Length: 83
Image (cartoon, rainbow, N blue to C red; front, side, top):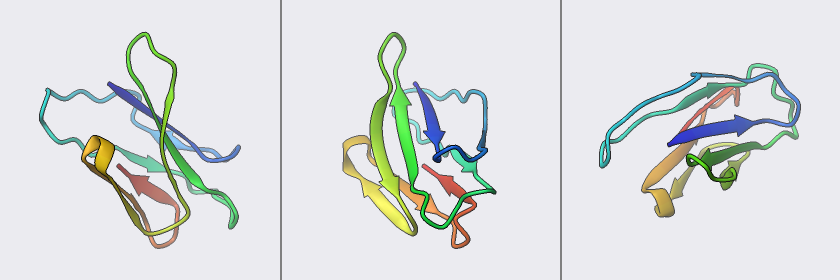
């Protein structure tokens, strides 16, 4: 599956693609160096042939995602996040 992230209209940097096997953990990181104070970080998932699906949004800290057995972590300066 693939993941995408958007932060308002800020510039984001993320791996173009990642690959893993079923039942194997993966860490997907994203850099958003120009994030503004009021911007929320939003992560989406898009499975092949499907529409993007919203997963989680956060402003800071960490958030557990029980639906996908994962966790979103936002760096202290909010300039990067990882799922």
